Length: 349
Image (cartoon, rainbow, N blue to C red; front, side, top):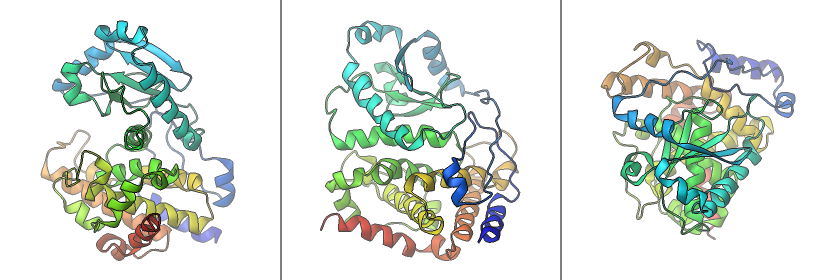
């Protein structure tokens, strides 16, 4: 078994040198004991210098003028000058000090110990006039002790603090920060699938969210190749504004969860152990086709999108080899994912 595991991991790692990361990943001893001699060492390179588009310069200027507020050891907030008085008066205490800080504590129950130098989660409060572009999702982060991305939060939004979909959505966005640290150039089917897997599967919110379970039951998902062929992964076919209800998101979630469950089964791992192995393989899978386009490719070009799709297929094939799955079936059908969907649908019975 040891030789088989090593051989499969060599296939996964082929043609792939270590990539620079903001914070190196630490594979815990208990996982190493289950997957003997597994050494997926990420280069301990400093954070790459950001190259911002001219249109994003206002974000850097906002960072430079902002005031730092430390909520706790794991969570810090950047406050723009015009909102400092409101923050100091307790205007964000419920939203950031309770809701966001609590969410980060939940995430750290899974991801604490992932890094040799643990990054701090940052939220940047975005002024109203910039919120349409920068609020509600990850944005470039400029703090050296944080992730490469920060979460841009709305200046308002104190209501609905205990509303489960809001909590899941915010957790989804912070999960993006963690995954960006491993690789920021993979296809959205991996990034959105992972960001939903964290709250819904790893942290168990699926069972607390009957509306989501019903939406899954009513959705006929896309195959991997269907997703890779889509022009717009973010098409909004959901009945409301909850992104996790979109068919593309449910399809991506089903794929990533399927891979995680196969890892758990093959290596006798917990969910938490499986997600660590998943992220390592995800990070180290080669991006040969994208690298052929040079260090600064045009990410709006057809060539770059085609290269990214080709590299995504390689990653799927690598997972299939490692997990004794049929790569063609995983790429072209939803047969493997149906097992996961059946588990979810049972929650509504």
